[in-house]
Length: 113
Image (cartoon, rainbow, N blue to C red; front, top):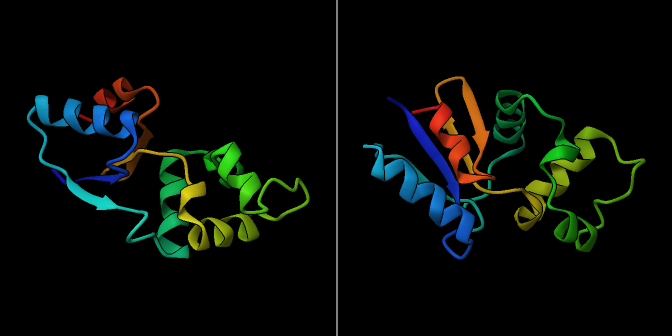
């Protein structure tokens, strides 16, 4: 099983999601995305696996702070903005093979386990 979590250890939902994975026998690769943000290509792949738009992956407050709340921005501009400002990426993201879920609520991860 190839399991990855894009994790922020300061976020309670991210910690809860990681704990839920571990409590269910998962041993994910942990990527602290604030220190190691995904590349543009990686983020595009994640968005595809999540089945959402780049705008749906934005955290509202952080997106506004990063200037990414403008409705006229293209998907590519939003993705580039998230890579440059990883705090604007919703968290946590859990990936298993070709599927991904947001850990909001943390129980979403159970669909992958």
